[in-house]
Amino acid sequence: MSDTTPLSRALSRLAAQALEAPVASLSPDVRAALPDLVRALEAMNRLYFRQLGGRKLLEQAEKYRDQATDEAKAFWTYKGPWDRLDEDRPLLPGTQPPAPGKAVYPDDLSADEFEAYLKTCSAKQQAKLLDPCSVVVRNGDKLEAIDYTQAYADELMPAAQALREAASRIEHQGLKSYLLLKADALLGKKPLRDAEIAWVKLELPPLEVVVGPYEVYQDHLRGVKAFYEGMLLQVDPEACARLKSIEQGLGELAREIPCPANSRPAVGGMAPLIVADELLAAGDGHGGILASAFNLPNDPVVRGQVGWKQILIRNVMNAKFDVVARRIAERVFPKEQAAKLSFDAFFHHVLLHEVTHGLGPAYRADGRSINEACGSAHTPLEEAKADIGGLVLLLCFGGKFGIPKVAPDVLGVSYLAGLYRSARFGLNEAHGRANVIQYCFLKEQGALALEPSGRVQVVGDKLFAAARALLERLTLLQASGTPNELAEFLEKYGAPPEELVKRIGTLKDLPVDILPTWPKL
Image (cartoon, rainbow, N blue to C red; front, side, top):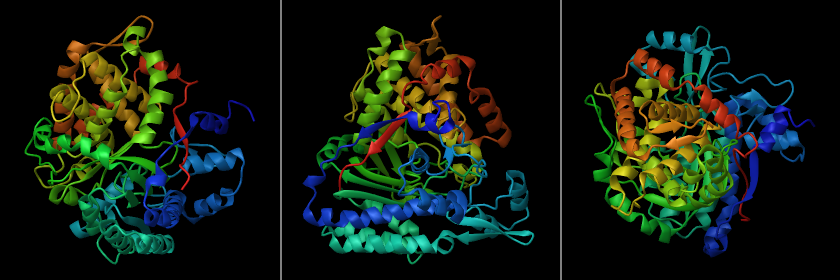
């Protein structure tokens, strides 16, 4: 197989890494439940394949499951025959590009047609069609919404049964109750929102179990449909205790993230920070790229009334820093700045990125969520806000609430190394566009300077003012930006400049991310 084929490139981008976790320290009852939880996550894989490409893609996945070929490895690594790190270009011969709305909309539905149809609907019909947990189908000349619990019943039933069997083995009452409630919620027997509230309130269980429809990144048609994922993590209670002071300072941190134009935040009172090691990820939780942290649930009602959880995945973060970020810094920065790369700064920026997701505008003055109001622009704006907001919080609160005090140039290098790392996932992907926005704006403000060699110099004394200006601009767009204003901003700052494309091109021989070997369960 040629080294230049899409398949070989896709496989060579990921560095194999064994992830470690102290599984032996789990109590016997929890260890006994692990096989059941693994089955629940396997069901999330099946659901995800159906959302991406219907039953045909699920059948293709089953065909590849027990094969040891490069095609099978790539298919299961990227969760389908498309390269998630190269704008969904086909990996396998004979594969067509995916529909923008994947299989949660009709294949022939365009964004323009959908928007025009929504304008003809009542508010109730619009709500159903835009419900994150519904599949849109054609019925003659009409569009109708089918709830996920009905559309995906075949895969949801075994997932719910696996969660119930896990609950029957676990003695921890909070975790047991949550798993039973989540099983009912997956089937529509209880509101999904009730399960999310129970999860946020669940304090330091031995495991964090995330199964369900959450992120909307794969909906390239309207940006609202949630895709199924699963994550199984082992909690480190001692590490969590060390982050309590940040939780206690949440009110003061929140005041640093603007809510302009009479927009409202969704601060519900709880925002626990959890440090955990990942044991397994499935569905949208591992489709080429492995998250090093996440902030859930996304439901603005839960976030507003109760709160959210912020999970920092320690074993994944360590692996990415050592294998990817450190080597990128050596290529991107002048030697003296590259030497300042700090895991402590890298870790806390990721942490405060997740914190910032829960702060700032959640609803506009007219009551609409910013997700609904911003449409497809929401994700790049929100990811850029979380990144730059995390940077602002580190610069503002270093030395308080357990946040380390880091010199601006050290922080800038560690932050920017992470930016280059995630920009390599694809400059036109939502996170990639968020990174381009930050790069272009900070450079425009003089916080980044290009050397003749093409390396980037962080200008520490200009970093805070530039970051603060970008944060104010992003939150204003979220709070009140018109479609034209959103489009103009993305056109100006979201188009990758030539020097950024060239510098990222010099990193081609470095791994983009890790390919995990999961801990033995």
